[in-house]
Image 1 (cartoon, rainbow, N blue to C red):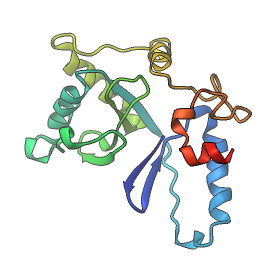
Image 2: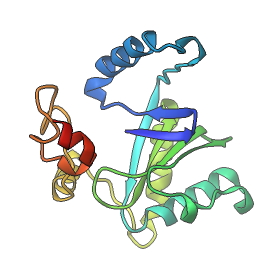
Image 3: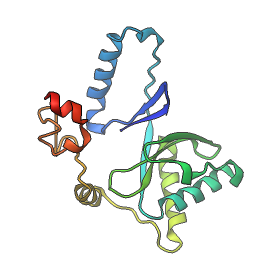
Length: 183
């Protein structure tokens, strides 16, 4: 997943199984980029990732941020935070949280990247918040796969790979019309 932090800053989250290959691809292509000396490439290591999905995701995340920031005036307006947008939220409790609006289930949601030493604590805090009214439950990869398939989303290494074109994977809807006409 690639999100734009600003017109000049991008944040890339690789599929765990492809991280080495993706990093090599980025480094190789940066080396051939004419202005490579002007590009800073930073790899964040030791990060955990939580996908918070579903109809209550925004409310639960808001509650977490209120707890983390202690002041509702410091909590970003999540209603104005659009799909594909991303932000960093510094907290005293859990370090810097990277929050991206999106998800891999076809439901609205957020992906929260956390310093790994805080991943369990943030997960437990989210579950505690979601426990009220049974608004949140853990779901495994099997549940995620069912939802992503219903939403028409492919998983790299399972539904597609380097030998599969986007057209063969049923992803024509993601390819610009002009690219389809060229091919």
